[in-house]
Image 1: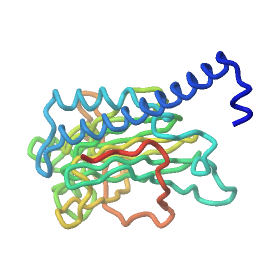
Image 2: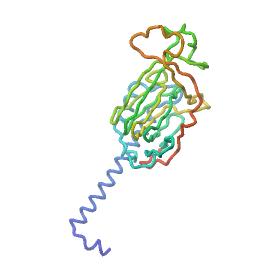
Image 3: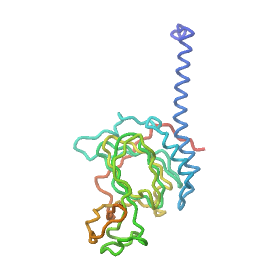
Image 4: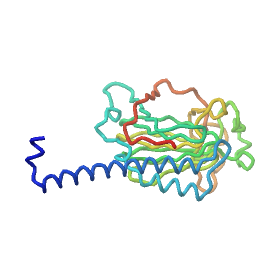
Length: 269
């Protein structure tokens, strides 16, 4: 009380202004995350559906504006540090999940890897918040129109044991800031692998989320060069690149740990 009484009117005004500014900044952060949640709730209709092109653009435009600061992340956090002599662990921050969609953040230290995996029946939005990572993604080749269907060892991609043919959709380094990537159930790189070149944070929105009970199980793959199996004498058409993918168990050295999300909370109303 005595200290407050000694402040001049100008100093008191400055203090109130700083408090108002702080509240304003906090409200802005909450609005960004809340707006993402509200948009997801409007865009995703549940299993078996894909958002319309207009809804895809609407959600993508919201994600494109989100920064690491908006979700309470910074490079000094422990999850972005690599322990000497240990396989880098991936940290997952959970924001929200329901039967229609999920929102979460993957935090990768340098050399952290999310191995090649799929997203069955799902539309996925991935926003790299900071860092540089190598991304490689694939889509299954349509076996009904597959010029390589007669290859020995090439079998139907659906529920088939053994290598199946996939087309490379992306294979390169992505650095933030960058646009939000979108993949669909059958297009856009539904199967992908992330390798962090620097500390990285990826905001992921999945619609619908994984569910073993509903047949949306996360499957992991090993990829092999196109020439690894018979048929390599066939010339690839249109400059497209191909590879063989084979189902595998979840890699033992792939460890994902959960950590509390410290950013603005989502209000469900």
